Image 1 (tube, rainbow, N blue to C red):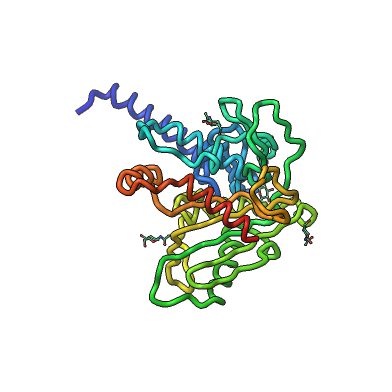
Image 2: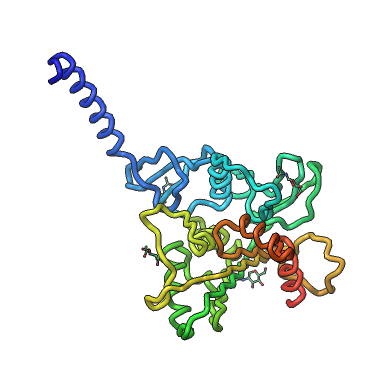
Length: 316
Ligand SMILES: *[C@@H]1O[C@H](CO)[C@@H](O)[C@H](O)[C@H]1NC(C)=O
Ligand SMILES: *[C@@H]1O[C@H](CO)[C@@H](O)[C@H](O)[C@H]1NC(C)=O
Ligand SMILES: *[C@@H]1O[C@H](CO)[C@@H](O)[C@H](O)[C@H]1NC(C)=O
Ligand SMILES: *[C@@H]1O[C@H](CO)[C@@H](O)[C@H](O)[C@H]1NC(C)=O
């Protein structure tokens, strides 16, 4: 048995801890739309507000977080993990980098990395110019007003019903990402491919509207099973109650203004498409790259990406 004095002081400690927990529990909350947040607290109208990891920006958990802040948070969480990197592994650095964001969360038009290599991006944070040095100027943030998504699902014995694909995906995009359905301009299905068009001009977008670039990013992460949502809000893509197992997703970003790549080898008259992001749905892509290269000597993610980019551009 403890001597009485000790018990008393322990009780005091417990009491203090309980009070502290109670007072913070009253206000703290889970950020539904962003798992990479800290210091969450409910405001008087019941919205959960938090600090995004990696930046000191407040985010509103009742709406999607901007892609720029998401990428920043993701890069900063990745840095915290310090597993030794494989010597010859490489990452798709064009896909995710540590971006500079404006105070309202949108991308700065010019992005640079630590080696003072700079490039201009669109509102989806995707590079739209050649890379340059730190004298590179980006006069404006060009808007991505069309996002073309192509999914390929795994082989299955029976195709989905096209109308169910369109209905269910429309519901998901509308309910989970809160995108006004008027911006979902097409959903087509042709086994095993699904095509989704999101279109949103600056003139159409009103103040509270979520941006299609943010929606596409949340969707991409959900499809890759690396959801940005709080773990309590995980979900599996399904059509008519049957799982939709995506094995590949391609996302094309089309800007209001043509990209400024020097595409000398491309035919004139190519106007629309620019960067293609190919995301193979495999966890541990880096490991895959290395093992495949060792075994077959010919798999390189970068090559595939470039080939895909060129082929698609020429097709249009
Ligand atoms: C958070 O978002 C909700 C839903 O759009 C909105 O009603 C609320 O005013 C926002 N709160 C803040 C502090 O921005
Ligand atoms: C910066 O970008 C250049 C050009 O793409 C690349 O070679 C370099 O590795 C990058 N540096 C960092 C630190 O990301
Ligand atoms: C959106 O912008 C594009 C290109 O500027 C234009 O062709 C299209 O008609 C616009 N759509 C709407 C609904 O304003
Ligand atoms: C999603 O599917 C996996 C595997 O089929 C299952 O374990 C998990 O419980 C499902 N999650 C939800 C939220 O339905």
